[in-house]
View 1 (spheres, rainbow, N blue to C red):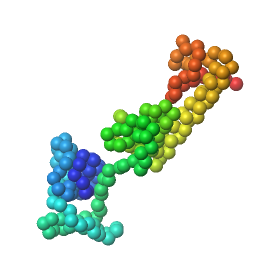
View 2: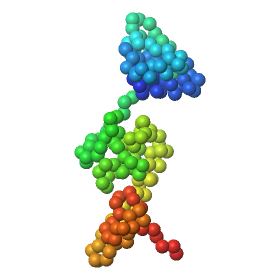
View 3: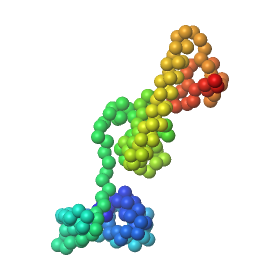
View 4: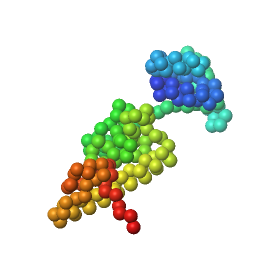
Length: 196
């Protein structure tokens, strides 16, 4: 494992849980928090703080790290935890809230803090999630859910706008029966469809 922060420690702990013999090469002083260090020690994960000068190897056979002051460490594989970055600043330009790790903040429906703007995939997460979901199947599911919400929001916007222009009072929503006019807020259920 190459890295020395909490995210690298988390990945090292995941690998050790699978039965792997893990050495955490921090390329300098460990930057992980005290709880992360304690967890590494409990799992007997060795830590090497020597600077890494070069990495070489042969795919499928070995990886060799050249460490200061002049020794090498050879392993079967090398794991790294790159820091993700947004490829576009569009979300911030639109005024969307961004979390401390750079992920766009969304709710469970994929809505950002800006009405009408949605996000899905590993570019975003809810504040309750520790990391964005970096899996294709989860990104597809988030995108599909956001698409349903967008479709319903457009439907309600069009339907309620048409009824308001015609001078007809809009139906009350189930979550707010006292409202006799106006469309429901985005992301909230509208009136139920009649059974045929």
